[in-house]
Length: 540
Image (cartoon, rainbow, N blue to C red):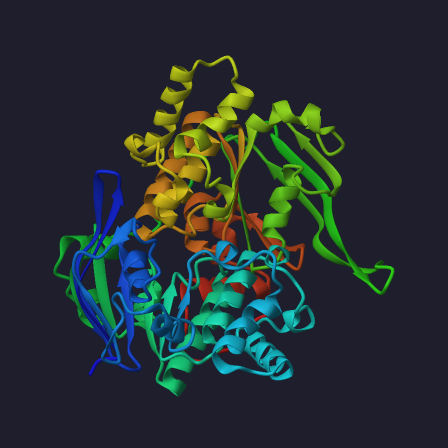
């Protein structure tokens, strides 16, 4: 008997009279100790299939016209809620794709990890705390063991993802469903987490259903591969067979999709459009009854940066190194010290009202596309919002035309513009976030992990799109990413950050071909040759 047996699973989503066939008669099984990778483009039905296993889809708008899901021979399809509660988070656990929206913003990290221990194991508080600390150490968050009261917004994207993994592993499940478990983490932590999952799988016999768009992970981790396309399972077989003798054209296309090319040349003699000198962001650490400041977290510690029109400056480093904080400080979205100037005009001391007209020329694409998009607004309203503020003279028809043009530029179907964010896949939401920034025709754009939620084929398309937009409008980019292959394809220069400081900077090719610092060498080794042989401790 297979640990998990899925037969003829179909999922339809209904919106009035309109029916979307998201999954169509999918069948597969997972044995004890097996790692099955499910791959495919955004919107192919991977996550919907995974959510169907634990009956987590939004009913009644989602329904199953056909299908059976059996775990250890027990039918889960339409099972009573009491049975499902005993299985969810206990025998079958899930790592969700978006840690910021999956974690409760009102509860501390300790409370959220301990919750599954209280519910399923009936642990006493002291034993639960000891287990929480053990789990945080297990996923490389040693520093958080002294900050158990921290909230999700106080952690970096990678740290939040590791908290999600700790929650999923808390009860040592028989089956772990991992939906893009390493999307938000940097390359060194990715290697460590994959080694951790592989080690736990080998020690405990835990089976893993791994949903990912990164085929380099699939080849090193998976025993078998299921390839999905537009709701269909188009190819299914051993990892070795899929990678060496793929039969379906779509599988061959996925295997061939890698970030390619090089950034377009720019005018190095042009005047600098964005400049920062000795930029610092220090967060106070308060303690005691009177909450006195006893120390500072030096998230950004004395950084200089210059970006010219048509240039892309890549910023890389481990999770928590200060990359995103640097981007937010440059755009005056958080408080900082140091000189910041845009087009030769100082903005570091500029009042908010004076700064507002410049916002259309300085845009950002945030890391978490779901958290950055209002669930109450349609896609058209989200993309249009900046136009209402900065181009109030446009008519409704003219705004709609610009929204349609921006969606086409970013590979979205304009016919979908009246839908809402929850109706789109993670990759589609990321493209909406890019369209929202580009619709204003900015001069300087900060791209914070803009391809992290995208599958490999769409990554390549977005890179080509960003190159085309840069060449067409002479855009300046600051590209924040943990995917060094994407950085190499898009960036002219690279800044390597660690603990809020720049440890190395220079032209992209020099950094990749002849890095000088050991930290840079470690990042490159992890990015270009991920090993899952044995787990190692990760820095928080």
